[in-house]
Image (cartoon, rainbow, N blue to C red; front, side):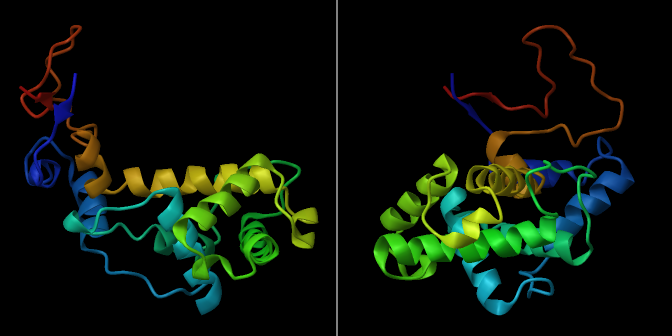
Length: 198
């Protein structure tokens, strides 16, 4: 069964008393945020990261783009983390810089050009090799390719779906965090939740 959340609905919900002030402020800031200029990554690294995130989670420009690469750059600029990492991985900052360098090395080894210069089909093949842990390139000896892919993909998805436009796309209304949820039985829906498409 398909569900649909009309464009603007989640954004409209932010203006209601079903959302706490702190949540409203955080999500409104995300909506109003302009594309970020990198402060952690170099311009070339940021361009490459943007090309990679565009393949990991392609976006439809019709409703506005979520600045995923900018969110990653902001986190690394502020040296924030989840507070843990795999023992096979370097710290997040180093992992991203090595992983980006290694991805470009793989693109050149496989197709003779930097990642961003490749057609999307070849970009996807490079990323498939990274995901499988089998990409060519000496820099992958310093950062495990499959783990780098896993961590990057998880951060891309997190950045996308923590944004109101991403939440609207899937009809997520969990940000309505004032305790007003009344429909608690199986298959009961609040009026603000998505309905099946007829």
